[in-house]
Length: 352
Ligand SMILES: *Cc1c(COP(=O)(O)O)cnc(C)c1O
Image 1 (cartoon, rainbow, N blue to C red):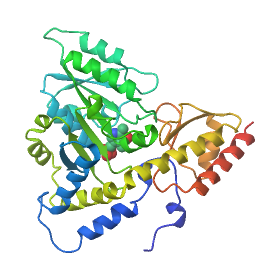
Image 2 (cartoon, rainbow, N blue to C red; image 1 turned 30 degrees about the horizontal axis):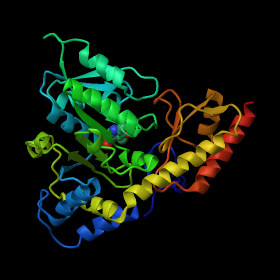
Image 3 (cartoon, helix red, strand yellow; image 1 turned 90 degrees about the vertical axis):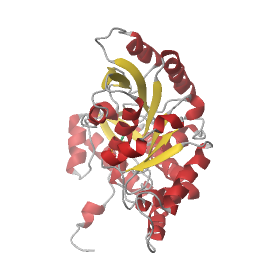
């Protein structure tokens, strides 16, 4: 291939979706590309991917494949709610800040009921407060709770935290949805089987992210309570989320799940985050803005330091959580990471 500047191809840590496709996903797509197959999900790869999820989650759940996380979250929430319902979420959640109103749109108006939080996590108290705040006809009726695991702020809900939230959901008749764009990173962080982190702890629907885990595209929607999936196939089709060549969304999942790459990839990304955090501890004028629990590192540093870093060609975002965010992926090269740390240290010492 020509025409792409080599500098453009160098690793950056601005987002985990800057990374490419991991070999396991790529090879499975290549295998699915040998010959013809039936369309719209009625193919052997899609069946095999759904079965791989059932094996991994140790339960006979309903599984659907959609193109991206916004669609997965919005359509899953829409299937839990009527238009007059409310969905309790955290103020830093992707559904609230990064989905352009899609959850409200696809549910025909279910309102997001937003809890403020210091660290991007929803608490049982916040859920209880929003669930019981109003019971009159003039306010949307709370019907679901959505939490992100791992969170937009790089935090992980422990099993106890999760169970405490789901207990409140049960008390108040609320479905529990999990945005798992980085679910694999949470599993790797807690060393916990996926079943424990979901249906065994009261999660009703999971959107399991493939893109940030090493796939080109695609998220899986898992309904642990199968009745909640009624007509979900129609919902996907109407929303433009039914892939005609579905095998290219599903085959990569076969590669990821059957080989264990989903967990290896997440472990590697988390390890890189810890490696970065350890180096930060020794740099003056720079500190962690959040504890490092998954594959994200949020760094507080002066604007001068950040400017110097940008001048050296490093990219990162500062609009999430009020600090500079660095994300690590399945392919993060530890040497490139160390080079970044050296630059950060030099920048920090320069502005001292
Ligand atoms: C990336 C991400 C998504 C999915 O975003 P899309 O761009 O729609 O694929 C969903 N939730 C969280 C927390 C994310 O970080």
